[in-house]
Image (cartoon, rainbow, N blue to C red; front, side, top):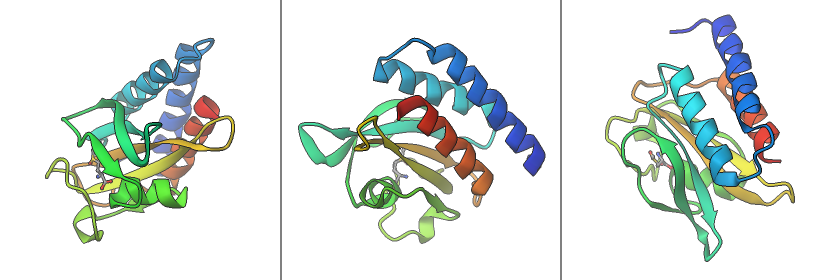
Length: 157
Ligand code: SME
């Protein structure tokens, strides 16, 4: 497991990398694809890394966006599972053991712990959530929360 110092350092590096790649690129898919790819390859404990977007034609549902990892569920109702809870509350969710989370949606049985960060657009509305799953329990802490919230804020607000 990485030390706290190593983790913070890695978040600082990946934040810079993402900023350099998306500089001048306004397209949301391009930005989300860059964030999911860079993050996924920066941390060994990341098993699934991707976005679920608020579906404009069905705003009570999240629909899958750019991601890295095994096939994910295509749609998640707002309010259901960890992603749906992050979307409904607009609060980052950290779950140490997904099997103990009531209503967890098991897209891949190997997922054990996860963090989900809400993504607000420039207008302040929820546009998506960033979902990161690990295949080991209790992998995400406040360093992940701070690192990911900072990246999301810098890329999408
Ligand atoms: N674990 C999520 C579902 C999405 S996937 O794992 C890719 C959840 O309960 O919200």
